[in-house]
Length: 214
Image (tube, rainbow, N blue to C red; front, side, top):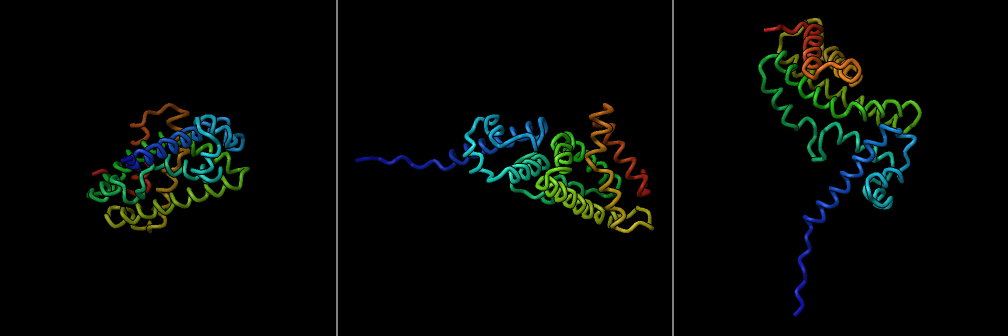
């Protein structure tokens, strides 16, 4: 009697996940240097140690690879969990005053920007000449603005902000302060420690919103 080997789907899924991660890591390096426009998918495949056909099978196109690289870099992992459902959001909502919320968000922001700065700056540069990169950059900008609108509503609902600021204006201030280019100037170019950057963010936004220091 011939005994058939049970199909190990979990092992196959893990191998596929490792392949996907290797491609994303390779793209993350090459899209930064020499850059998105200068990097053909064949170069990404070589860097990742996979066949270019495998790369196409996983991502379909260079544009989709870039889009998913941005998403994974922002989230920090490839888990199918939307940012509003991440633990740090629940932690912010549980805090009782706006400055405490800003302090918790500043820690998250520093972690994200430390991880994503190079990729996002490369994307911003590519967006000036490549239509696909420009579309992905614009989507990221719009997504960040929507995220800050949600955060603004949370802060306004908590109270303690200037009464002349509406939710949209608060969102604009938050959106400007969290821009990755601020992190680039202060941390990557001027050498600030992450703790200094976080204090700058909290003090700057608190000052603009007139959040009490208590």
